Image (cartoon, rainbow, N blue to C red; front, side, top):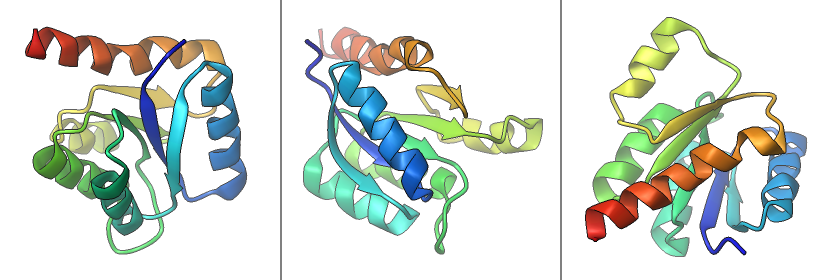
Length: 128
């Protein structure tokens, strides 16, 4: 069984619930769902997830890229971007935050296993 706690950041409610159900099926614990960058930062601070699965385009003043940068710099929590925007300019902007990976929407459960395991493996290597 997988022990990682994941914070899901997605502003489309139906998509967020689908992601949550998929992650639970894969054995992950979802410690919360945030719908804005501001909420993501607050939830990351409070629930201390092992991984944040972050949509790039979010409602509110802070988009997913800005929120990911804040979360990585202040809480050292790895972020995997989940986005429908695979264009070069968006990905180049996202690269600055040094994400642990990208998942393009829509995704299938089997495609998210490897990216979600990668941060844990990288953290173990850094700590070991």
